[in-house]
Each structure stands twice: as structure tokens, then as C-alpha cells.
Amino acid sequence: MSDYSKIIDHPHHTSRTRPHMSMTARAAQFSPFAALTGYGDAVDETARLTDEKIELDEDAVRELNLKLQQINEGSSYVTITYFLPDLLKEGGCYTIHSGCVKKIDTMENKIIMSDGNIIPIDDIYDIGFIE
Figure (cartoon, rainbow, N blue to C red):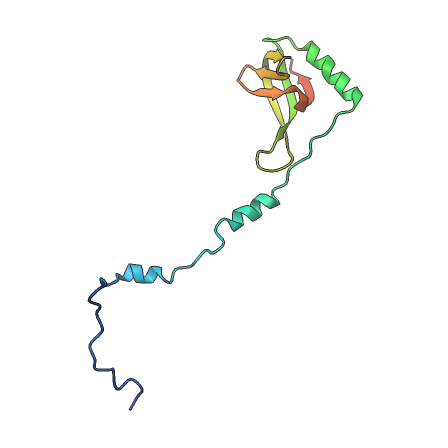
């Protein structure tokens, strides 16, 4: 006689108070559990590298100011290399933007390009002229 001999011929129990659980709902109980939701994203963000902003010396600042004075608003096509701060962590990256300078706003200390891009003058690393 096996250990189940007392219950083997009994009917399957059905609850009077709870509805029968579907096979899908029963299977969901055993699906993988992600206890650390977002952990992978946090690790990826931490591993993402950023650059530090390069501080220009006096000679480089003087040269940059001369280039800014040579720009003719509305007709100068330039390539500007500037530092773009990262929104999520310290540092950022250097970006190159080419186009026509619409306006140099000395009150706000920024360059407004004809395509609407705004570049802070303090973040500019280099300016090249396109002929």
C-alpha cells in the first residue's frame, strides 16, 4: 500500500469561495521575477563615459575672441567645436556644429545659428571658417 492510498480515490477539491484559477494565471505565478528592476539601466549609465571640459589658456581665449570678432552675422559659415554638458551626470562631450551664424548675443553670451541651434560662447573650444 502506497502513502497516497487514503486520498487517491477522493474527488479533486473545489473551493466554494474562490473561482477556479485559469492555466494562464497559474503559470504566471511561476514566471521569472525581476527583483532588481532598473538595475541593468543603472549599471549601463554608470559605465557610460563622459569627457571633462577643457579650460582654455589665455592665448587660446584671445585667439577665440579674435575669431568671434571676424564673424559677420547672417553671412559667416563656421564650424564650431563646443562642449555639450551631459544632462544625467558630470562631464559631457565635445560636439561639432556647422552652419551660418544668425546672431551673436553678447548679453546672453551665446551664438544663435540660422538653424536655431544655440551655442554658449563659454563652451566653445574652437571656431573654423567655411569658405
